[in-house]
Image 1 (cartoon, one colour):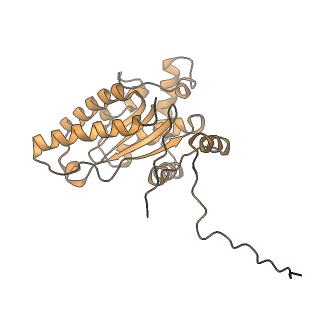
Image 2 (spheres, helix red, strand yellow):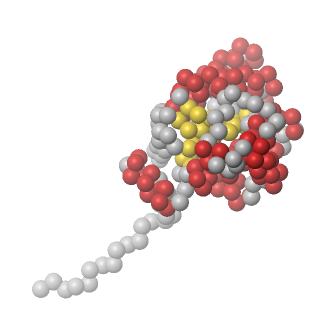
Image 3 (cartoon, helix red, strand yellow):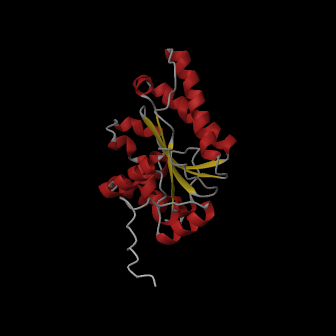
Length: 234
């Protein structure tokens, strides 16, 4: 079966996941994570993509992004993969691809999804069992108010949560402390797996018209059969 083309659109919010192959993940040290963050900053500039939240882990990277052009995400993922492949080859003699399959992405409706998606991304280290220190490789501390990070560009929806940085940070600290509901974690994981956009009916209808393609999965099973024409011809 041919794989489904990836949904991507300029100027819209995207959730992106890069999964690293097992050999790369096993060798990924804090030093490589620091380099990965540096390469991410460079790729954001050259690919004209705004980064709203991120989390870097040995096995996978989660990014919440808005690209200026639809191909910006692919170019960013390719740039990250090439740089990491060269570094892992130089340091560890790694051969072959560094990614476990192609990168995964989904389009999100900012108004209804941004804050939950920020939690999904920034709480990924905790969900994956990382030590607290792993949080330095995410934007969580930035949004808590404990650090600054030049590669992060806050989304307008995040800005609307408070009139001052202190108000926004206080609310975000509370959201991170509360955690993300399991059903929302499954929703974002499922959206990444299937590549289907997430939003309300109006958003999805407008997106389908913009992209000129289906943006929701078909109902499972075969289409219902039309009733047979029981009329008797003359």
